[in-house]
Image (cartoon, rainbow, N blue to C red; front, side, top):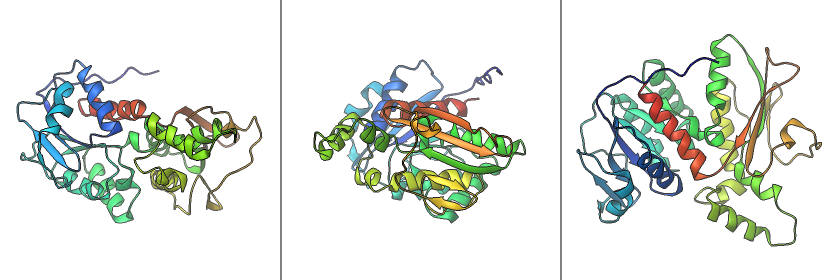
Length: 301
């Protein structure tokens, strides 16, 4: 196991955080408990209000200050001229903000995102993001698939090492995994959905989870990362892509997860007989915020 790269000393990095919902609040809590003076929150906005200070905003006070903030139109506008090292965090599920990601990268900003619509949306936008990263930009996307499991990083490292991805299959919705794992039919399924929303496992609009749209976005991101063409959801291999419930044997690699686990199997030239398997919690503000924080700290390395 190699040692973690050392974090370079330097001046504070200004952070602009978009999103003060479940994930945004969890990230603020983690920033409040982090002794890292080089990460300075200077801007917080949701779809209605915004607050900013060049001297920084204490993360523990940010939500209270946001309630008294100025009206905001939900755009990705920033009040300060971008400077090298500034970081934008998108903790929303907003299509309008997803469209700002290439623009932020063009301005020289580092972008850390939990918003699946940027890489899981129009191909032209995803390609521009990839091109900006190839040219030296920083784009942290660990929180977009698997709530921070190292899926995208693993795929990129396999391909960078000369491996070819032959197929990907996985339980990609922690929400659906949790709903189905504990449902016994005795109570209304809608009550189970409401509990998932209350626990922070579901998307802001739970229909995004229930219709499979969230899984489609995640697999689109995985397919593009793997250098493949997406056909649909949840399973991708030489025959194309397909979605839907599957009857799995109890000892199937994808059936062993519990609760809201994401479990993913990756087949490649290197992992032909036995797939590379990655498993961990796949829903919840805490693990998603941890992925955002991990990418923030990677900006400092």
